[in-house]
Amino acid sequence: METRVDEIADKIYRFSTLIPGVAGPAGLTFNQFLIDADEKLLFHTGQRPLFPAISAAAARVIDISRLRWITFSHVESDECGALNEWLAVAPRAIPAHGRIGCNIWLNDMADRSPRALAHGEVLDLGGKKVRRIDTPHLPHCWDAGLIFEETTGTLFTSDIFTQPGDGPALTEGDVIGPAIALEKVLPFTAASPDTVTMLRTLAALSPRKLALMHGPSFSGDARVALEAMANFYDEKLRDALAR
Ligand SMILES: [Fe+2]
Ligand SMILES: [Fe+2]
Image 1 (spheres, rainbow, N blue to C red):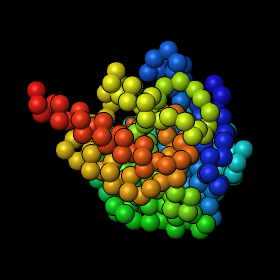
Image 2 (cartoon, helix red, strand yellow):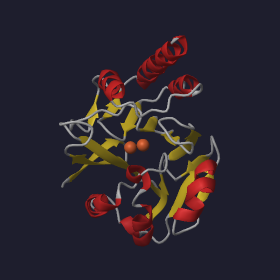
Image 3 (cartoon, rainbow, N blue to C red):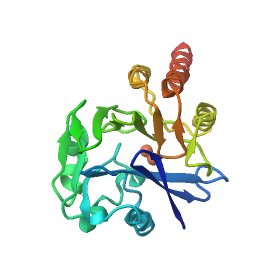
Image 4 (cartoon, rainbow, N blue to C red):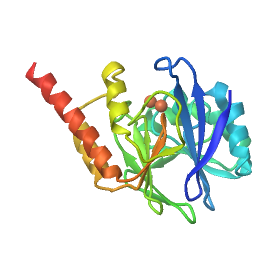
């Protein structure tokens, strides 16, 4: 199993591992992101079995013992399964998550006390600025949230826009069609009355890059892509109510 390393924005690195047979015959990529600022931040830890490959990939970019922050979207194995393995090799790293996630899970699960991030709170990493955005149940799980790196305009979307198969690290192509096609056969998003509003709020950030957890990163007018996903769920919810 090989973990690819690519720089998808200035000093933002994507670690990508294709797992065959997941979500269909083309397999699924599992991607983690490193923001290489003065205070280095890892977004997503990967599952525990992937830790040797992902940490070796990260060690090609930085001294991983210097990681300062480890954060993620929501509590699931691919987002945070290897959190404690990372904490063991990065003695100064602080696990960070939204307040709900700390209360319902991380205060108990993490080997080191977590830092609860408020909705909208900005971490000044020194050269990069990361804003935590609570998105409860989007893509799924009550504790869900995303991060937005303000200097590069990069939105880390977690499972939103998930698409199967391997591909380029960075694309300017269509990330909407493949995501909607997969959602129709594998409805993993917990569409709620707030889903559409949250997606439109994310669109209003006008991100220049989208860092997908499962699929290529996207460069271009991400506002259009986020509005398209909002429209898809709006229609889906209206259809459900009309039944
Ligand atoms: Fe997930
Ligand atoms: Fe995921």
